[in-house]
Image 1 (cartoon, rainbow, N blue to C red):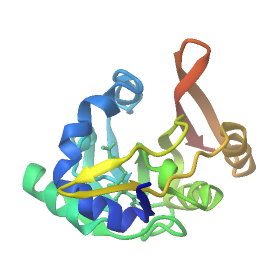
Image 2: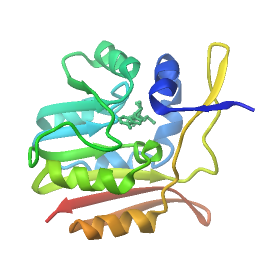
Image 3: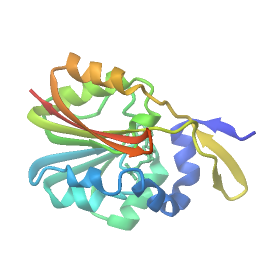
Length: 199
Ligand SMILES: C[S@@+](CC[C@H](N)C(=O)[O-])C[C@H]1O[C@@H](n2cnc3c(N)ncnc32)[C@H](O)[C@@H]1O
């Protein structure tokens, strides 16, 4: 049995292997997420930016781009791979370390799966967004977290498979206007992308 560890420790261990997973991550929605990015925004924030897999795409549509992640090792790799990005090392499970109404776009790609307080993340995103700002995120469907390998270590990273209807209730509660885009594999959904606008 492989041990289950918290996201900070897990992604610090896995950071140098993360690029090997790009193709698998892309297969969840075959590029649909990136197509939903708005065309031009002033300030964009990526929560759980990781090593910056999609950072160039978000940077390209924003005047100011800020990336936040709990893992210092993922952020180090992000700087090595992409340079010149404003980065903050922080845990976004209970709060986002940014001023209220300061962002036009918040992106959280493959992040909710590691967030315990999903309602808190929706609430914090609402607080940080300007009016008409966009919160773009996904939920994924997996039976259990994958076993990851880094050197001789085998482990799983603590994951939470939030029920989509619960997340949708939170979006409604905070008065987001939202749309959902599903990727299916036969009868089952694999990924749900949400584009939510702060009203
Ligand atoms: C599956 S990776 C996704 C990275 C990137 N968004 C992408 O699509 O490739 C999840 C990222 O979220 C970060 N993360 C996990 N829990 C977090 C938290 N509570 N606060 C901030 N970042 C977190 C991890 O360190 C990791 O870099």
